[in-house]
Length: 111
Image 1 (tube, rainbow, N blue to C red):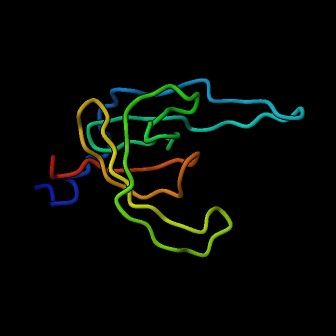
Image 2: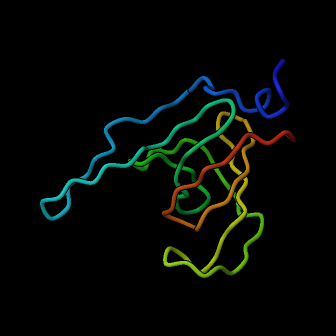
């Protein structure tokens, strides 16, 4: 019998979008990102300008809006944002550090 956590978060969710080739070269050094991933359970994406959710390469994959924010002490950002994202018409919620930064969000039970 599966416990509640296993029912809500299976080990592997089927991906409907996985970005590839996320390597850039800067001053002779290569940097690789994991890229964007969209599944039926979670997303990893990037907060673009004007509420556009993007992949690593800047391609639009959805939209987002900031729900709230609060101050934090971090070398990455001085604010943390609660974010609502819509990808393929599905609502995801998570936290991020603002425009240009990545976000990991889970599918909201409230659609």
